[in-house]
Image: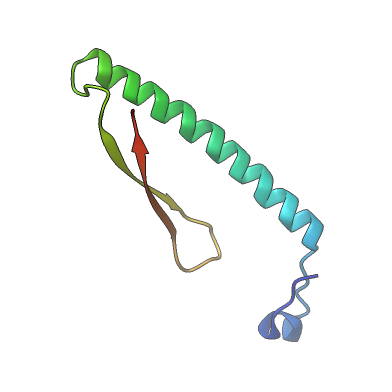
Length: 81
């Protein structure tokens, strides 16, 4: 169980298995959806001539979770070739 000092003072306890599985389910949905949308967007830009197919595209993903004060920001590069 995950507890923090402030949570335990209020009696808050997290079921680790449920918490972990819930995060994994969310991340799987996020990953599948993001990949599909990126692929569709790149294909559209390729067909419009906006991309040539040899680019490296900078990417930023921002995840906001209600109850967590800071957004989670992940950056990376998506290479097309």
